[in-house]
Amino acid sequence: MKRYPAAIMGTCLVPWTESYDFDEKAFREQVRRLGQNLSPYLYVFGTAGEGYAVTDSQFEAITRSFLDEAGACGVEATIGIISLSLPIIVERIEKARSWGASRFQLSLPSWAALSDEEVEVFFRETCGRFRDCQFMHYNLMRTKRLVTPAEYGRLAAEHANFVATKNTKDDENFLSELMTLAPQLQHFLGESGFTRMRDRFECGLLISLSSTNHERAKKFFAARGEELTGLNAELRHALAALKEAFGPEPLIDGAYDKLIYKLGVPAFPLRLLPPYSTADESSAPARYREAMARLAPAWLPE
View 1 (cartoon, rainbow, N blue to C red):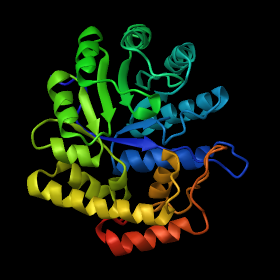
View 2 (tube, rainbow, N blue to C red):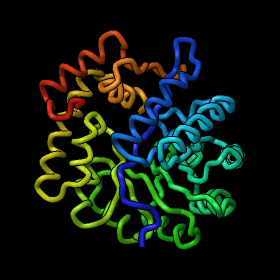
View 3 (tube, helix red, strand yellow):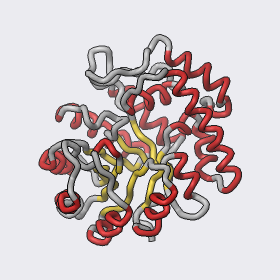
């Protein structure tokens, strides 16, 4: 039995005003829009949600707002925790628990790649310390090492409240081992990995490009076989449109996700907390919409 449902897992982005204050009104509108139209499974403070960048006071204000709005509109809220410091991670989990949170997304500390033994300690001090909470692990190379499928199997056996992972790798062998060596965990995969695995295994969708059109995204999630392969081929054109809008300069995750969201909500701001650069507000949205209309028109917002 999987410990968490197979579903679309969506991210909530943090809108900032021109003075870099938290725009709570726009944020709550986003939570309602995604929860009602896309999926009731949402998280905040991944890399796209600038979880690496927020101060303690911002973390509190945004978390409290997210939990309140999620409770009002039936969203299952997950709080991301990113820090170089394990004590800070533990402290933020404790604080969020006191505000009503019970589901958390973890990423490994990234100042140096953790050894195998240090990974065990990290999960013991999070999952093991907070047995009344559920945990999802975000596996990405920004942390300088990936947790392997075999490690996931051992960690899942040790911690019954470790329930899910997020993996965006597109390697067939890695993904197949995820499903077979840690079968009790729900594995949320990016669109390409989801397409590779869904006909053979139960898995969740870590939505990104396909979130531009909510109804088509739900069709993608429900599709199998040739239909799923065809929809994923369309998303490759959508990716080309996004790259065309940005140009060759690579930016941090949130820059791309905010432009994707802005396609459906033109008033949503693109700015990121300094020092990180984002897309040009005056030209990128128009370039993106024009490229989408030309390359992937079926994925334009309803």
